[in-house]
Image (cartoon, rainbow, N blue to C red; front, side, top):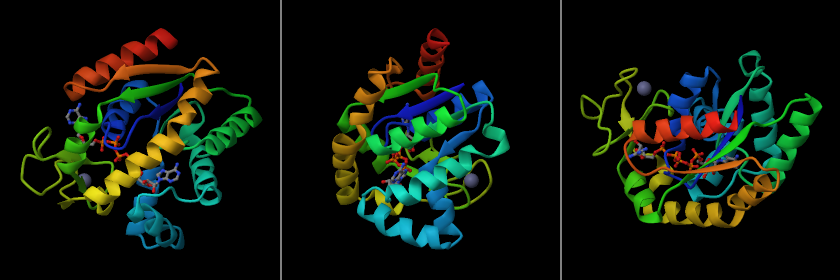
Length: 217
Ligand code: AP5
Ligand code: ZN
């Protein structure tokens, strides 16, 4: 399956993507994680992306689209993928459509995670991620690590993301509403959007998502 996951910052896209990708046997491709991994490795791409991310703005399309395409061309993504955080504006959605068309494949669904803004703020405020791998995600109250400050998966140190400060989160939400939400209408016109509530326990949301995707199958 080829799926796009969309939802505001802190909706639980990364958390759900990990379970959905496993259940569906497709790779989880997160542009946010790809940027953070470049930042950790201090690459030129990482240095460029960091200034935009710290301000809560989108990294320019010229950089992002190439990076996402390179990742989608890896052999593990040949038969499907779960995109998390990409596309994030209409021009990225158009670029993705072109790439899929060139490969003569199509998206199966766009899964839209709906969460009220006050819940999103709580989720982001308590989020802790792993220094070694930013796809290892915890929450101080909702899904705490077994040992405080230590990643259950790999033993890495847990920390708060630089862009999770109150001011940057406010900007990220604004960018979501103005630049990312329009892609929902773009995909609705293609009949691809499935909206689910992302409230409730993590496994309940996963079940809801799997049910919704099965109906699309
Ligand atoms: P990115 O990393 O994509 O961040 P985001 O979209 O803002 O989303 P988040 O990672 O904040 O949240 P999430 O929905 O994954 O939630 P999570 O699962 O962690 O992007 C960061 C930046 O990179 C952007 O601002 C931009 O600068 C740049 N960028 C990335 N992609 C780009 C693109 N395509 N174009 C341009 N720029 C791009 O969950 C949040 C917390 O809630 C966690 O602590 C989790 O444990 C907890 N939680 C999850 N589910 C539940 C639940 N059901 N109940 C209780 N708690 C829960
Ligand atoms: Zn880890």
